[in-house]
Image 1 (cartoon, helix red, strand yellow):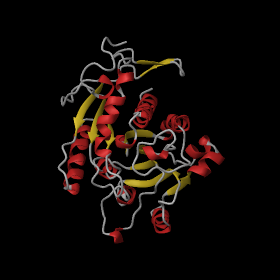
Image 2 (cartoon, one colour):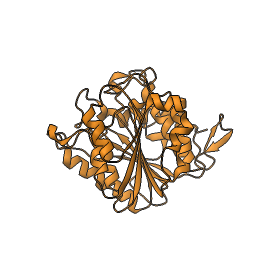
Image 3 (cartoon, one colour):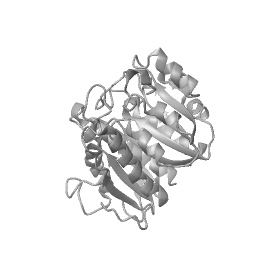
Image 4 (cartoon, one colour):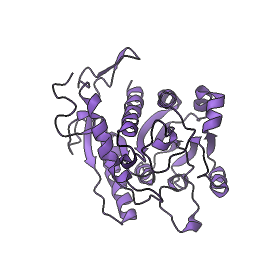
Length: 304
C-alpha cells in the first residue's frame, strides 16, 4: 500500500504521476473537460476532475510493480502496467470544433507512440474526436449508453453530445457500431432510423436484461480492433445520478462490470472513454466512483 493516504497530495488519476513525458508508458489517462456539446444540463466539463478525485481511495492501493489486489478475483491486477496522468486537453470556451480538433491532436500523439489512451469526459461529443485520432485504423465501436446519439443534421447541430455516433459512423475507418443499453424517450424514431441505416446493432436495456449479458456480448462481432465508449447514463440513475440526461431502467454496476470483462474476448481494445459524468448532480461522488471502478475493471481485463 502507498504511504500516501487518499486525501493527501495532488489528485492525479489513481495517484499516478502527472507527466507529459511519454517514454516507457503503457497507459495514459487524459481529460477532455468539454461540455459545449450539451443540449440540456451543463457541468460535464468538471467530469475529469471529479473522476480524478474519486480515484484517490483506490490509488493508494496500487503498487507500481505488484499492482492492486482484487479480492473478488483473488489476484493482483494492473501488474507491471506503467500508467501516467497526461493531464487535460486545453480547451477554449465556445470554440467547439477547435476543441475537438485539439482532442484529436493530443490523442494522436499517444496513438502514434502505441500508448493506450483512456479519455475522461466531458460530454459525449468528445468520442468523435478521439476515434478520429486512430487514423487509418480499421475498427468497430461498442457504445454503452442510454441514447443512440444519432441526431440528424437538419437540427443545425452537426457537433453535439446528441450525435457523436452519427459522426463516428461516417468515418471510413469504422466498420460497424454496437449500441448497448438504449432506452427512454430521448431516442426519437428518426434517430433510430438513422442508426439502423448506418448499420448499427441496437440492443435495448430491457432486451439485454431479458436475454442475459452473455447474449449481449455474443452480439458484438469479433474484430481486430475495438474502441469502447461508455456514457455513464447507461447505469441506472439510482446508482449513478450524476449525469445530465438520466434515464430509469439502466444497468447496475455489476452488470456493466460483467459485460466489460467479457468484451476483450471479442478483439483487441485499442482505447476507451468514459463520458457524461456530471458532478454537479451528485455531491456524494457515487457516479464518479462507479465510473472509476469501470475504468479499472476494463483496463485490468485488457492488461491481463
